[in-house]
Image 1 (cartoon, rainbow, N blue to C red):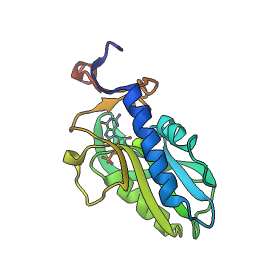
Image 2: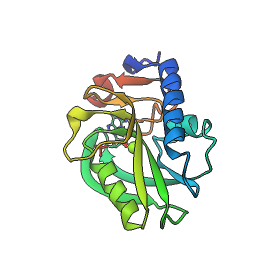
Image 3: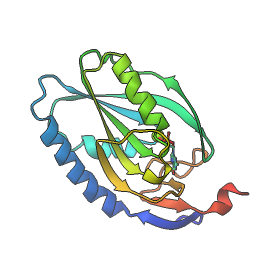
Length: 180
Ligand SMILES: Nc1nc2c(ncn2[C@@H]2O[C@H](COP(=O)(O)O)[C@@H](O)[C@H]2O)c(=O)[nH]1
Ligand SMILES: [Mg+2]
């Protein structure tokens, strides 16, 4: 295990088997769509989760990415800014937003509204992790991989200062790393 990780919260095997179930639930719910589902990953944290899900889809789909920022270090600063916008239009489309983690809910609430403002017909959210104790606004994901306690986690796409995204598991970062 990486020396900066205090404990492994969710193992690689647990993530893989949960993603298999989530993908089949999503497939079932989207099987009657008349046009391709637009799957949008929020960069950078959603990349491993999005790859794990989409490789199991057999439904017609298109993919795109958006980059928004709302965090500095381990703190949510509230304001959500777009750093990279979509390549696709989403007028009249069904959109599935893929997010790594929902904490205060401010990011995903703002992003969901952005998609409706862009003319999407339907917007659903799938999040690998949910920290309901951190919630400050009224928003829930439609699909959640794991509900976790209110701790700062890294790995499987999630970073601290751009590090640890490559870990194959989700772990709790030792506070000594960010109180240095
Ligand atoms: N590496 C981690 N990133 C986190 C964690 N909790 C939140 N976040 C980042 O913020 C947004 C969502 O935050 P929200 O407060 O607006 O809901 C999420 O996409 C992450 O990028 C965490 O524990 N570890
Ligand atoms: Mg994110």
